[in-house]
Length: 314
Ligand SMILES: [Zn+2]
Image (cartoon, rainbow, N blue to C red; front, top):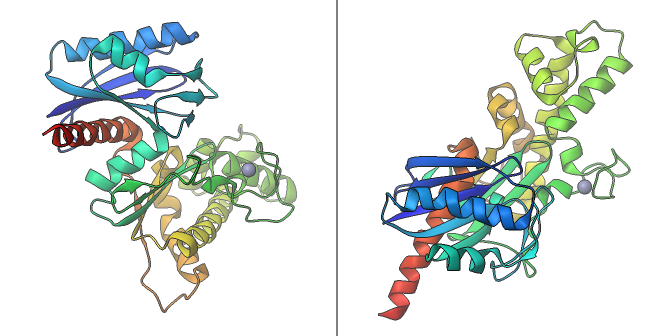
């Protein structure tokens, strides 16, 4: 059975035909329009170009935003035009296919747990590190959403009381110390605070540039990366104390630089977790799917939804 996974992002809508093994057969994309009606139309057109040529059984949509508990309505998505729009039903009517909606981090976690870095793990946590931290949790194959559909907000665990201010209104959140943004902030502090020479003193300071400078051996950039590794390990120890996962999957743009920090992060994690030295440790792995994870996961959830529905009817 083939299904389509759609990643509805702030700049583009991508749709892929995905097979039952999590392999992408073909991808189609379009720019993300500015209004809700145009967005629905763009998704329908992008999907139809594929469903005309492949026998697909349903469509899964991954959205970076707040999805209602019944997963039919997008309540709010900061980078999209939808505000309380019954996206799943509107597109199901339009396409004549079942449509499943899912938060993008949850969909990505499903892709990794079904086919990727956490394949077969009973308890898997996905930590997507980019400008902030997105988190998702899969327990016994099911996405854990909490009672009201907002769990887990891992990025806003407070790791430093009275620490760096966060856009959420609190201070000292994990993502202020462990993200691409944090890497740039730490490097800026180090450049200001030390007289050491660094290419970062003259270059612009983005997380990517700091990572590149660290790869090239710049000492200040390396210290900024070491700081990120420490906070990644410390934060994962908190996550492990709550969820005791088998596998933690590191995803997001910052995971591209994982060779720079992952071994260090594993050491900090192993030292900081409760019962260190006396318990099995979660395996910490880099995501398999990169930026197609949410599409593959949404397609897999849709396949499972269609199969469960068919079983229900017989
Ligand atoms: Zn926060």
